[in-house]
Length: 183
Ligand SMILES: [Zn+2]
Ligand SMILES: [Zn+2]
Image 1 (tube, rainbow, N blue to C red):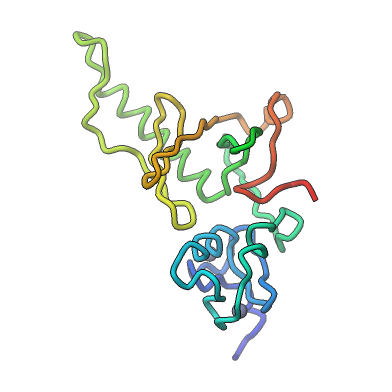
Image 2 (image 1 turned 90 degrees about the vertical axis):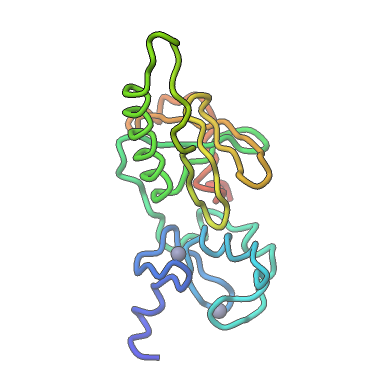
């Protein structure tokens, strides 16, 4: 392979030269954490997309923030978070975070334009905001601040907090998108 340094840093799943929260598999191939997590749910999930080496599910399930080669920090004014299954809050990865913020701003504008003062309610014919994280589609309910797994309908609370107010956030922040900050 030519220019191995460069090709090492590309995620072969999303083809980005700047993988988000890049992790290295035992075979030394590098992917965005959410890309390889999404791949894990596919029919070929137990093998590396590059070299077909076997990947134990534990390798990906047990990855922590400390395994990330280069943690991608968000420079967004707001940080979005979702509730963990066992409590606490996970930050969304920087890409999903920007996407959520954009959707939220679009939603806010549509809410104002759709407001029907006679009915004292909002029009509901707008498409449901949706984001794709890894291989999973989530519907976002900004009214009730929830993300809903489109397939399982499992809903989790979400939050939007000013990035510079995160220190004052009373809840426990566990890490980023399933990557635990704890070792
Ligand atoms: Zn990727
Ligand atoms: Zn590999």
